[in-house]
Amino acid sequence: MSEDTAEPDIVREPCWRGRNIAFAPVETDDAELIRRWRSDPVIAHETGAWPASLYELRDRIERYLDDNSRDDFLVLLPDGTPIGHVALTDQHLAEGTAEAYLALAPEHRAKGHGADALDALMDLAFGELPLERVEAHTHSDNAAALRVLAGSGFVPEGVRRSACLHRGRRHDISLLSLLRPEWEALARPRAWDHL
Image (cartoon, rainbow, N blue to C red; front, side, top):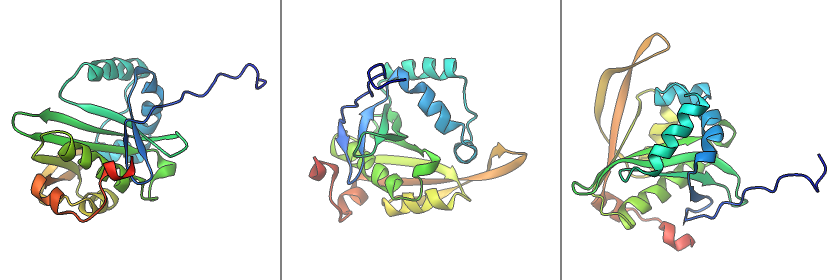
């Protein structure tokens, strides 16, 4: 294909920034990209979710777009390359609670992008939304996720023993949370400092 006939790259307009990443709202056309990330065996294991068909995932994303209890974003590098999916789900604004979700493409893990994205997501949760508590769940043996969560100020609350069946084994699920006063006490630049 010549340059004249190549499709132009989709330009994402960031709506939120971290230190070295940005967020752009997830669109229905992102289903194939998200499906590829979710098909990675590490993500499937750590989230306990099987990759959905492209049709099912497109349908789910369309429902997400109309769901006021969640905010879904692509994580972008400074050049606009999408590298992951981050979300605040199960938002109950009257109670001030939500759940954090983060999945990065395999080639972009262990480079600090997860911590940057989680910090930016928490700045959104506590700096722009009236949340008091954000929780996260991960397999208890997911050392990388537990390090990222702890680095963003999340505090372990407990373990749901034998709560997940995956690959023929039962796994414990760690529950962590970050409360507004804990986020306020973090001595780090906020997302709006990067705008």
